[in-house]
Image (cartoon, rainbow, N blue to C red; front, side, top):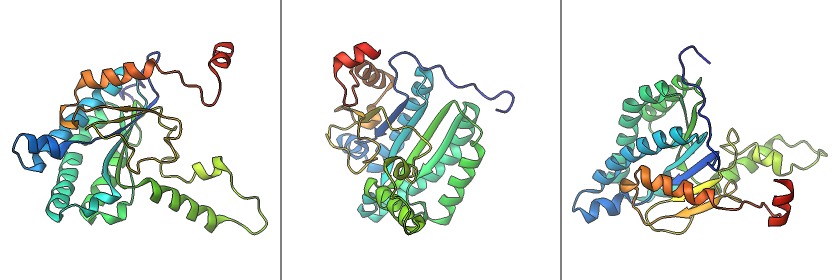
Length: 249
């Protein structure tokens, strides 16, 4: 690690290693205040900064944010255009601070769907932060869980040799777009909905699911702390019994 770069944070007891968040409620937040939807998205960018800082403080190692789903392309064209411009401006504005704070940025999804300027900005931001290890921040954009599974299967089919053993779960997982990260321990969804909406379908198999009515622009440090506290009380058995956990604990 380069001299002067922040060291990896010490994860506190009971804190999830990997937190994934579905950031929902920007539009409803704006509508309730008689503001254009873009105002909600702009305020939502501020909450991203809040959660990044809170994650670093708690010692979370991986933070994955669902920013734009593959289905979101169906939204009104003017809103999609605003979101893309906001994405570009946010990357330009935030990347220096991310690098200073030891955050490594990755963007996963169908990146080819973005215009050239945004693709270039993404590549530049990823390269600038590639040496960082304090927090691994993944922005899932133009992403869908079903797409992720299909593209992994297509890679395996293309690489499979006749007569070779068929791949198992481990080989399959290595072809997913987030193979660099452990599966999420905790999923947080804001905005009151109780579904995962095609986000990390494979990877969320054993995640703890925390749903809150708080809209994303209102999701402050206290709300994030509440989610972490809830997670710390969960018993994660992964198919085993409570008695087995006590004996092996």
